[in-house]
Each structure stands twice: as C-alpha cells, then as structure tokens.
Length: 112
Length: 187
Image (cartoon, rainbow over all chains, first blue to last red; front, side, top):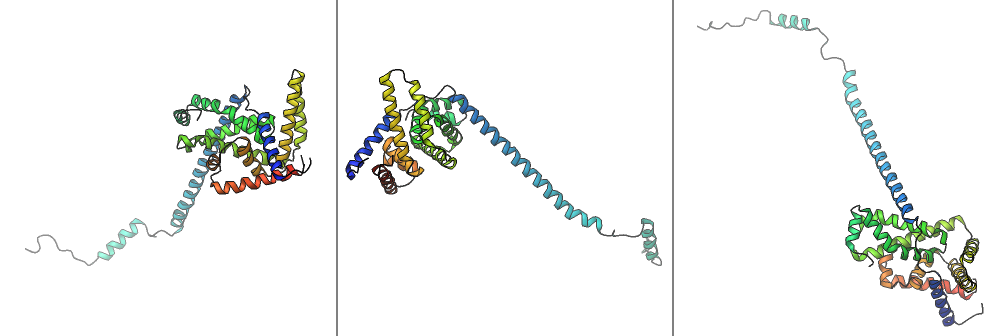
C-alpha cells in the first residue's frame, strides 16, 4: 500500500469497514441452535443444583462436626470428674443417724 | 425493541416458550454481530449460545425494558471478548481458518459471478480481520461496535457503563492504532 495523507487513510478505512459490514450480513441460525442452547442451559442448571447440594452437604457436615466437638468439650470433663459422693446410700443414712444421737425432739403436745 | 417487555417477564418467571421467542427475535442480529466481531464463522453459533445462556441466567437481574438491548449487547461483547482472549491463548492461526472458509465459500457458490463476488467478500473479511488482529481485543470490539455495528455513543455508554468522554478517548486511540496498521500496509 502506498503512503496516503491522513484524511485519505481515514476515508479508506471507513470504506473498508463499510464493505466489511456488507460482506458479513446478519445470519440465520442453524436448526440445531435452539436444541443445543437448551442442552447447555440444562447442563448449567444441573451443575448449579449439584453444586448447591454439595454446598448444603458441606454445611451440614461442618455443623455436625462442630456440634460433636462442642458436646465432647462439655461432656467429657464431666465424666472424668470424681463422683460427688464416695459413700453408699446406707452409709449416708448411718452418718445422719449418728449426727442426730442425743438430740431430743420436742413432741407435739409437750408444751401443754 | 424487537419484543414486548411482558415477554421478558414471562421468560424471567420460567416460561420456556417465552424465552424461545426472545432468542428467536434477537438471534439473527446477535449472530451477525458476533460473526463480525470474532471473524470465525464456525464458532459463531457457539458464542451465540453462550450469549443466550448468560441471558437466561441473568434475566432475573433485569429491572427495566429499556435496558434489555444494551444488556444483551453487553453480554455479546463480553462473550466475544472472552472468545478472542481464549483464541489468543491458544495461538491459533487465523489465516489457515480463512483459507478453509474461502474453500467452503467457493464450493457453496454456484455461478462464476456469484463466486467472484464471494471471493471479493472473503478477501474483505480477510483484510479486516487481519487488520483488527493487530490491535487488542478491547480496541477491536469497541471499534467494531461503533464503526461496523453503527451503535451511537449513547448506546455504547449503556453497554460499557463508562461516560461519553472516556469512550471518545478510547475510540480515538483504538482508531489511531488501526489506522497506523492500515497505513503501514501491514495487511
């Protein structure tokens, strides 16, 4: 191409682009366009729903593990503590009786 | 606008028939625009389907009828841009594709005059695609939307969501780069 002045180049470019527009007219789609489009829509939809399912499953898994850890943190120390009472029920009753020895409880009607 | 907004609302609510009507109303225009933007006939429908796929999943974000067409053009520009970027990464050679296209066109043409006209058109497509290959994808798409698709600055503002002055600067620079390649006779 020979060197041109700026206006000439501008005009030539405009003409070329106009010719290009004419050389590439709007085009009709093929018969497979719509079926393929819906296939892609469905594929995306199932990918999205499976990813949602995966997300939900992950959320529930994390929640379950967290709950298990919290419950473990609360309950395990309780099981590890020594029991509050070492004596049996009978021992406790005997101890209570001996504590009451020598104590005379007033009877109803003594005051009269 | 080629369709009523009620149709879009129906499509948005999940009416597949309505969505089909929306696609059928715009696909010829959109496929033409994509063909001019990417310059590869064999990939036009693939990119076109990507545009309408994106439209389907973004319909719920559409709030007003008047923004539908800029919205659709924006999706088209983005899909074409993504395609061109992918092509650039793959380092595909445009000239081999054009040769193939040329052969296909020549085969399809019946008469000698028709064939000669098709060869002329193919040559023009080849020259312009080669010229646009010298500039970035951004410059290429912006320039095409303005100079070939004939969109106004106001329409481009809605598509690109930048103000008119910024667009003018970008357009001027893009055109200068193309002019430089054109003037240098690189095509």
